[in-house]
Length: 114
Image (cartoon, rainbow, N blue to C red):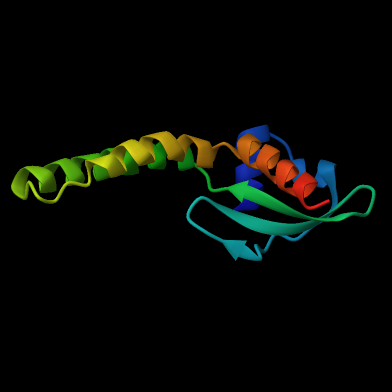
């Protein structure tokens, strides 16, 4: 899956050019991404987070589905008002899909612990 992701995104064997070692088997996987262990050219062991392919497309469809379901349930059962959830997803999901934001937050966290 990682090779497919890199090739479709970068049109080259990205992991071969950036890392001396790259384990193609993920050590963890979740709904948005998976994590691989790698070693940089200077020998540093790192964790590499790789977003699942087509995540942006499927996330948009998932968001539309949640909005439809929440609105339908509210229409059928007015006391079931979770429309706030749609606004929350609309705001937070793009941030969760942007790994540059996550990288910046990780650097801030690292600085806070120094």
